[in-house]
Length: 370
Image (spheres, one colour):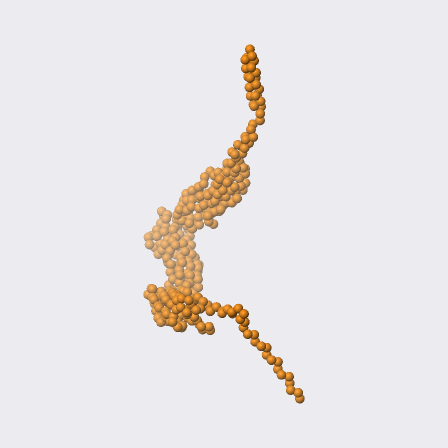
């Protein structure tokens, strides 16, 4: 009997404890677990690449990159940065609530690009997992008429300006034969001639300077009208860049401080770009113990003069030194290169040694009494 009563009491105690535990509040660790599951702002794009296919050179391409804040906190877009000036970004939402969707408009200006092109726009945000996301826009730029090179550049000097020429190749990429008008220049100092290599398909545009061209940098535009509806007008920029007939490098030799502690060697390069053949001779330096050796590296065009200054060399105060090379050119009969050198350092006075001070002049004697 006593055993049955004890068992009943134990059962009742167990039931009471279970009810008490069931009525207790959840443990404090539950909110901590919820905080651990937080992800913060998350930027998620529908696509990171836009392929615009094939377009005609000069056209502009626009596309929208759609994105969503897939996180649980406010997403902030701090900036969109493009790889070059041909690609620009329009207005985009700077702040996006969780679950909201926005778009970043990108525009690409094809300009004078050709062939396969890829451009990048980088999106920066407060997404800690991916703070920078690269967006890619790519495709093929097709030119109905290929112009190569894009600029007709001529390098000339006063002796070669009359013969300066550049060749531009024109290729028709369309199925229909191409016809071109006679070229016209907006600068009378440029003349242009059109040659046909393959009728309707390949041409050469020869651009040169007029005989009356003056000795300065020139620029102009040569225009051709075409039968192509995709490229009805071709504009080719022409430039003539003037250079000196004779170039001496370096134009001046600067020696270390006198006297030279060791032998010093220098090389002077002389380059001729004129129409004749240049001949040089007799390289000399108007200072003792300095050797000068002339070498012709390209017949009539390029020369080197090897100079050797001995140890202890010093240009005396008040004197000048220079390299002289004789030439057969009537404008440059003697080519001269100045030689300079830092003077000796001032001699420091010994401690306690002072330069004597000059005595003041004695006053004049008083006039003799009359």
